[in-house]
Length: 194
Ligand SMILES: [Cu+2]
Image 1: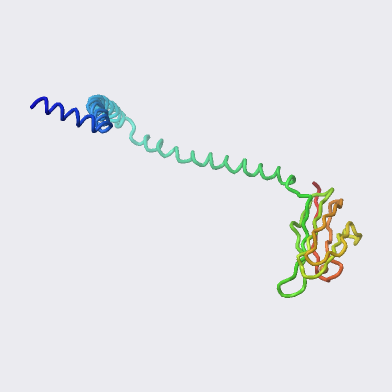
Image 2: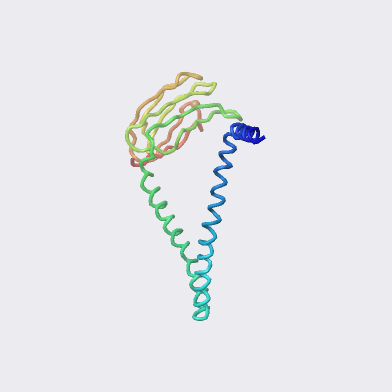
């Protein structure tokens, strides 16, 4: 009988495998933990319990005032956070000026034609301007400075023709970019230093 039982136990242990191992791991800590915790926990509880009882009669009113002091602390980090944010965007702003412009001629939904720009502000200097005609009619393009003097011109592009890229050097100022064939097909372009 004993042999049969031990055999069964061995089989059970082998079959359980990890299960028994887990149980074996769980068992020892259970026994150890209560033993360690009990003395440690009791000591900790007793020590603070003694101190408050001694200090309570000395100054009960001083303790609440010190606990409310940490409240102003959160305002200090809040003040330091916005400071780096305001200084950071100021510097990279001039670097964002582009020197590339896309100009597209297209048919307006309600009739007529529309000229649209990929951006309305460029950095001064050498510019690359790409003229695209998506309209069902032909359009040309011209860039004039504020005095009406042409800075660059494009010949008429047939409907859906291959886009034409031209280079032009523009100084800071305001420019008029337009199609000479259709009144109202125009946009204003601003060139800034950079
Ligand atoms: Cu036009």
